Length: 406
Ligand SMILES: Cc1ncc(COP(=O)(O)O)c(C=O)c1O
Image (cartoon, rainbow, N blue to C red):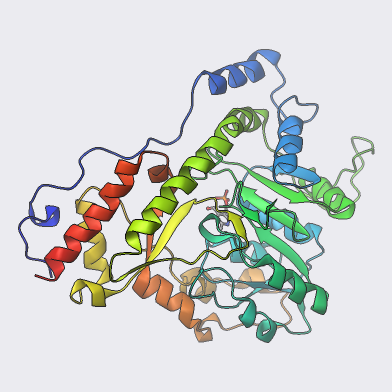
């Protein structure tokens, strides 16, 4: 409990009263691009002038050969899993520290998510935990570039190749992120991105599947376009697909947003580096580790680890409340996915599974610690501002620390 009356949580003056950088960022370019769609009368992506251009542009940007746009990142995962050949009853290894879609997309395609723990230093899928999760039913691994920080793709790809598994990168949070100088998304067999409102590249909703494989591209394209084939007739449906086509409106916004992505990524990285330097000097605060192979982080989130020992035993919940009251929004982040009710009670979707998993028996200690005890999130828009904004974050934490030590 904090009793210090200087703290904003107890009625004192907050460190910061102004808001952080606004989000979304837009100007006339978005308006003109939307106007262009409106006045052209070409509102859907078949024969479109925005969606096909964006697919090519974003794929090239992320060092991939092909892109297929879809309405959101969740559908992108479903289409990608099917496109790499995941079938009913197959198992897909996923981390439990992620947004639900990474695992629920497996269930939606009647595959079974098998949770493997995260690395406590990076919060990405721990390569050391993958092999013990492999069974004869395992078909794919879906690492998540959590917070925009690439997972250890060298080790994950080596394990996948050794066991004949496919890799679908969940890069929903990792626009512009790089592993050893190569952007993520097509390092594995396929990769997926989200363009949902909070994402570093956003159109309110949206998603894309990237791949270097001609075969995966053909399948993804076909699945997203009701089973059509690219050079086929209009009423020729070779496989079962759905209508997962993005609209021209979404692509129009994305093309305009993309013009800022490089600059925004640079700003986020510079501010994050400065904040890491400041936070690393505060006892009880440990920013997540960034592997040397991560040549560019997307900083969709900035995550640090909180230790009450540096704060006179103050619980994380009270720390979050106190720092937020100082004008610095912070969050505790995810719940371990296997603890979500959806994985406890609603598993009819899993009826084709060859192996029923009782998710109440799953226990991933590093994930539990990240979720229940130490993980603290800051958000990407906070890193688009100035160094003074970073100083305010550090000062708010230091103020709470001082008060907590009484
Ligand atoms: C890691 C991760 N995977 C998948 C998704 C799903 O994307 P969408 O919200 O666009 O469906 C998200 C988005 O929140 C995400 O953060």
